[in-house]
Length: 336
Image (cartoon, rainbow, N blue to C red; front, top):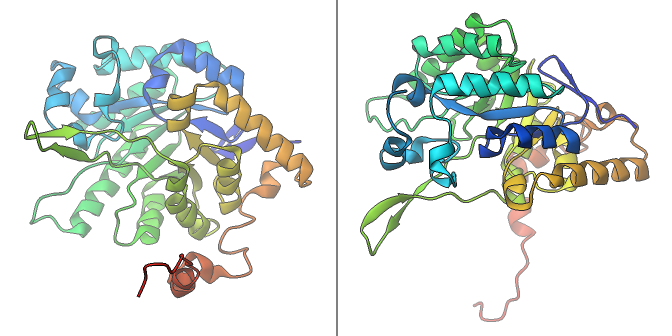
């Protein structure tokens, strides 16, 4: 039974990869992730804002724009211990790369072109095997068109790609006008992998204190459907590895992601809720399922249920929309 997979030119022993979260702040946690069977680890994110304002305290971000962060800083339980500056991040990245044998993928969170991309070079020097560039912004400017936003993103990817020799994956938002075309353009800009999708942590309104408050809701298994659909449609059509993140909680979720065409399936919420032991449990359940259904390798499984391989390709597109609506059955009691 072969659980190894290839992602960003790296040979991973399993397709289970903890995604960027506070869990990777601890070297002990990263060692445990390796022991439990993770194929690689994505470090918590170094934010563009941290690079530009490294002298500021973390509470500045918690009170001004937390909703713009992909990994909500308001969730972190111990604010005093969280490493906020770029130098501390690089130190922790280097320590992690020395502590384990599995690849460590650095996470750089930004969306505007600028000199901060030089930190990608420092990440490579610190021992990162690859960089995950998290494109995250809220384009609220009324004069900013979608084409301009996307061009800025592509410029960022190109700058990071040119600054390092290690592979670059790009984590994108689902809120794009033409996702498939944009992914193709990302590949042309130098992306070796596409991570689908980052999650937008939305603010809430407290009607009693009259304050806007950042809120974090961890993912559920239902959240897998959106990235699952897009990975199935992109597999075999763009020259990039695909990673599924958001909604991976069980071995079934991980298998679905691989069947759709993902090279790796990434987990965070499940590990935050139920512990790092879940990596081992999911891995063992995946192995048992593959033996039972006579799959010899992840390679055999990967893409087997993608759009280019299923009997009804329209199932992933609008052509199946009416069929889905008609499939709904509800107790008619009370209905006119």
